[in-house]
Image 1: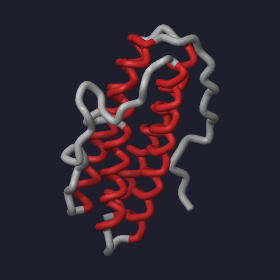
Image 2: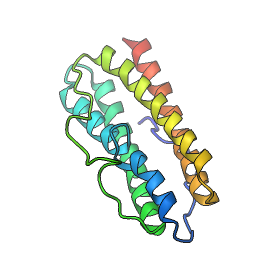
Image 3: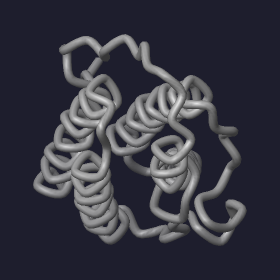
Length: 158
């Protein structure tokens, strides 16, 4: 079975309340380009990809890693004094996931989505002051970079 997350551990989050910083995490947690959208997208892709078991298993495995990111962010938002609502500046919508059916096309789109996620994490790190939260986001980026590699390898195998 392929590994869908970096082997490095995730940091423990012990921090003082900081409501402003909790709000910075909300788009990553449940915004249109956040973890909740990635989970829904990759689950959908795993369900509809019936002709290529390797792709179906990979997107399902990556969805599980994204679920872990979602949990880590939600718990961090609470520790910072926030309330982890499924949405950033707006409530989460079922219109956010990518419902493309063609595997070659959705794999390319997944790469672009992971690149946007990395950019969003990196921008958020620059706005944060809480070191353990920065470290968490930097650790999540390692997984997102691995996902890009996996998607590229899958495209090359088609």
